[in-house]
Length: 229
Figure 1 (cartoon, rainbow, N blue to C red):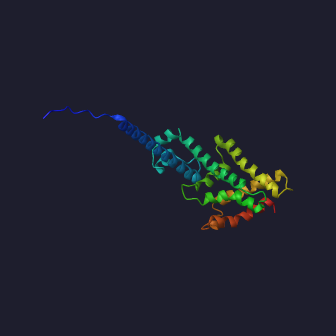
Figure 2: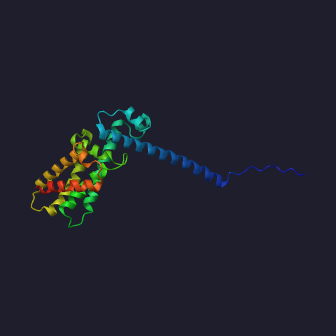
Figure 3: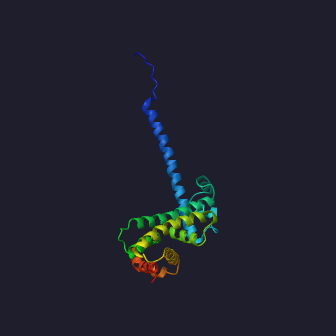
């Protein structure tokens, strides 16, 4: 028998590409895990902001509720304050962007009732959203509208004003005889109605109702406030 030396297995292009793929999968897995942690922190912060406002939120309490650690807050946001600002801004932008989309989708011959429903619908949707999927947005928005932190005050005013401007454009088409200043005052009054809706005062009236039923109940009141009569 002739002995032949065993040849070394070549790494070859296949094993090299597999190693690279596995490394990329590990990186992707860590990235996805980081994104999930970031999302949990934002959701938890929004829940707490809606319930109690900024001043009573403590970092350790928030991270325990989000099932993570304090280091993750510093890694993803830098500080608790920065996390709260991100959570607040997301909540406001979600509702305002939805309002703008609803108003832009209206036809040119939209009625006052149509306009009121389009403006109000995102609030109803937020109030009826499942926990963790938008429900705290209204609570956050209302708290900010009443007492915004100094760092967000200017940005918040400009963001809300963008929705008011678009709404005013629509209302002019159906209320041409109402001066612009009067229209804007009525819009502020409607904002007060929405603040009350988001609190406990109207909760018994809307409890157990579908979003459509809530719209049917409240949109006439909002349209009436816009009409001024």
